[in-house]
Length: 192
Image (cartoon, rainbow, N blue to C red; front, side):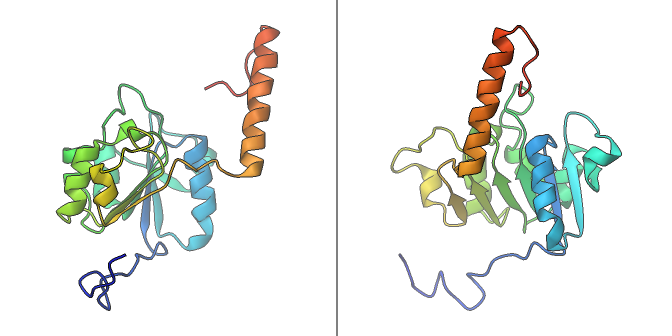
């Protein structure tokens, strides 16, 4: 790697503390709720969320429902956990990135198509947002030479959010239970 001082000044290679920050969750389904539960012990200042609908008090897990624009403007970290559909396709676009804080860090663990990747690259390279982390992108895997791969303030993982034995076992069991329920003409317990 490049160990020159342009990338490794005393302050240039530091992370951003999650404690004391505002974390925005886009899509408060099962995954979004689990993210909030896992972050509870990190002394987060506040959790915001935007989802198709406002959740009940116990489902919110101390998060506050806000508009999409409020989520963009007020979050230090934005964690995307929504499904990909006609309403969410490339919802994180040039306009969305322009509304974010300059220190915002965007993390996508949902589907690659939720982000306009060209707009993300522009936002990262111009300093419009601080950084991003992607567990999903379009296409998967990215071809060699793809511009995302040369964006320095971007961390890319190879869609490994579920790469853990217990999780994969639970996924297999959910699939098997869905098949059994479908064959019995019953409601599937893990229906999406």
